Image (cartoon, rainbow, N blue to C red):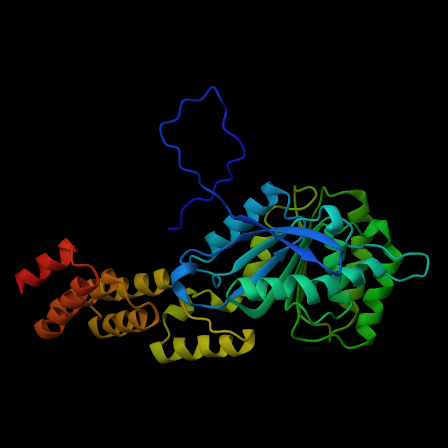
Length: 368
């Protein structure tokens, strides 16, 4: 299980604490933006094991990253889901302060959203290249915005920007300029939107009037065309402005195929491989089953004495996640139950090569 993520804002002087270690959710970084004409800061939260993995990761770009509460919720959401439901990913929280405070949500007198276009250019020419140079990222990107920032994310989606693969919008303040967004949505329908870009929109039944008043009309336009690409618009009951589960539900929607359901557990190993190979083509980066799920499946088969299937699952697990002594040890135990002492010995010896202090593997090796 992943470590808990804690934001440490301040220490109360009256508290007497023995431990002085700090737990953090990310690191502040700054860079100069030529497009915006000043310094921009962001928070970055990296997946567990980033330093040693060598993997290129998808990225969630979150607006209003200066809100530590929202950023912490997003970081915890991604960490929890990546245990077994979604790929590991990097979280970037853009601080919409200073020169980045105005990202454009409504048109000017000319009827154009010029500031929004400038901010899209900032993403394209400044921020995305900085993140690409600084971290191991692939080309799958998600843009996430709430409330007013949700309008900017919605504008990116409607403008057919090619910068992002998926968009998450929580309680967009459509009442700020409803006609602009309703007309922009109708225009998108006429332009045959890309089927590969996804939108997840969420709001509460107790939301602000500026959200609720125009949401029915907006969603109605989306429903007008059966050719409209993948989108989900959800109202959460007994919930107010910006439902906290928005990102959680959006990621489960975007990566729904990554969840190994009970039906999938009945598939053969080649069928599971084929499923994830197909997903990898769809997303444009390698997607594999999560280690914990495969391990549980292998243990279940071992306990059910389906040793051949269990051994196949353990071998598949080890091929995806090498260097874990536990997996080799349990593969060895499965061989023991099957009566294959030679292969069991090799597994225990490999576990000890990985971790010479692994007492259980030493004991198992002595017994055979």
